[in-house]
Length: 154
Image 1 (cartoon, rainbow, N blue to C red):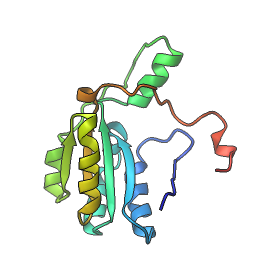
Image 2 (tube, rainbow, N blue to C red):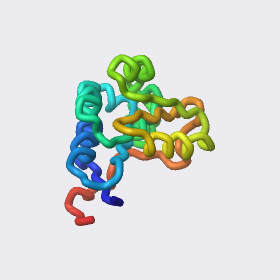
Image 3 (cartoon, rainbow, N blue to C red):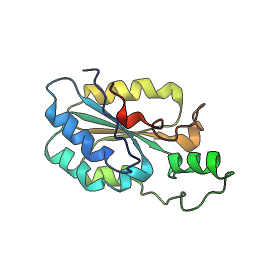
């Protein structure tokens, strides 16, 4: 409980698989994995593994219909010139239904705690999709780990 793993080095898409590993490798409560929609698409097959293994896992999928972190970097470093960061994403409810993974969509900040609590209380893997288009951007943008973080011990 209360352990965190954050991949350093700028990789995209490993969160889905890392969540399965954390869930199956832990004897504690359900693992919670924070995902973006862009990275999630690179690891959809591992969601099937989560279902097959009945992994004690909640994916919190923040869907902004883009590579949001890449857009933040482009905004900060390239005067908001965005290229190749808008993505077409699947209908995650349909995908989850097809693989047998429970899914719920949250469209307001106020609804998130109850949705997360329900997912944590349920058996097996769950997806709580946060509609970032409906909610709006974070107050502070995230553009990856701080420079040099890979050398720091936490």
